[in-house]
View 1 (cartoon, helix red, strand yellow):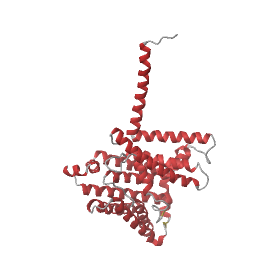
View 2 (cartoon, rainbow, N blue to C red):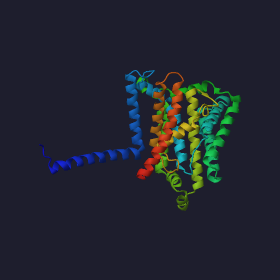
View 3 (cartoon, helix red, strand yellow):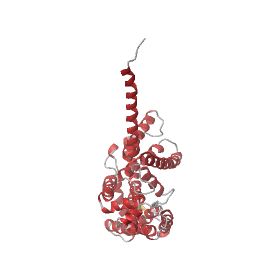
Length: 359
């Protein structure tokens, strides 16, 4: 008969409790660090797709080259998600449903300036960005100064901007050699794995860095977090809450205008329905912002989380597309997007209540 000593009896529970503590610490870290969680999800997605590809369960090959090429849709989605993150941070249940209309109208303005008036691309870009920033500022004025609910204000202006885009130029797109040449900015850097679209590095990366700096290293960014966290406390701290909130929507308009220019470059033409076709660009951008850690209540959000969330959604859509035949893929993408949004909201709520931390 084997006799267990008291020392041995004490070791098993201690080892077990340590394992539980380690798992709990890992779980807490994943729930409270959205960047880390998204990095894990991206790796898990790639590994899952690789296994499915090896078992011949996909309708097309899953390769690193395929992932690189799929990044063509990464830039516009990430830019609009950054716009939504900034607006959500401003609080008051901030949300911008007008970005699709702004993208459409901004693209038509840019196309008219380049093709119709034959202005240079840099000058046309500046004028377009000023125009879309003013569109965003109009949203901000309605929300910040007139007290309109963000959902109603941006839904109304989104309809208006989209309608103007559709009736302008008789609903026809602008196209021409000048716009065709812009398509080169979206070409891959090389072949195979290196076929990363150029504008990922020349447009998205600089914008993400500037957005991170503006939110984390400037007075404007600190004011934005403050009004999103507690409007009254921010007001007592001598922060102009109305102006700061208006500036958040203006920044959203600026990023939507940049998205419009990128969109024109990708399609080599300015299309009146660019931002509102199908299910539009606003809802995917909102989903990505929430998945990236932005809390609808305001005051919580990270640029790194938003960018990684955009990457995850783009690659998830890419994997779904080669997992189903015909038109089933795009339909499943919509289902997946809805599930991601619900899951992200539940995750944000659970992490906030369980740990009381802000991501």
